[in-house]
Length: 138
Image 1: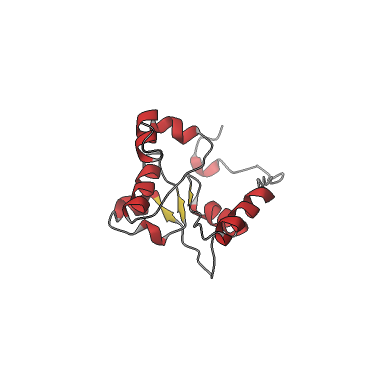
Image 2: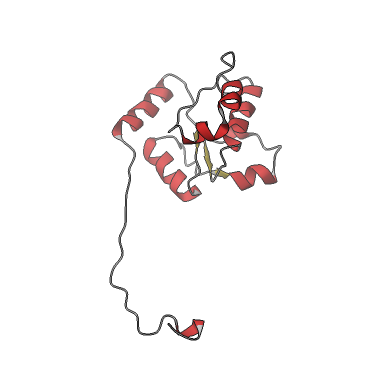
């Protein structure tokens, strides 16, 4: 162990790099295309890094006409008056921000639905989840 931080990289060699790719399934791409055809606006709300969210959204065909906007959870906290319906990709969001985004879309007259992996839905707690996403079932 080196005695000084400056010496920590002395005598080491880079042996290689590993990249991991987890591309979206083709069924996801066709589902997004079907949504567009039916005039349904798909929106991604993720905890992923904005660059990852943009890359996935681009592969899925969610970002169109050169749109590269990915609003972050920090952006939402910094500007709570910002219209979230102008954005299609939300990144680095917290589980608590997801229903807030959905509520904002609903408050502007949009019909909403949400699909997910179930992790954040369980974090939200059944009562909150039902009131926000599945009204009438609480």
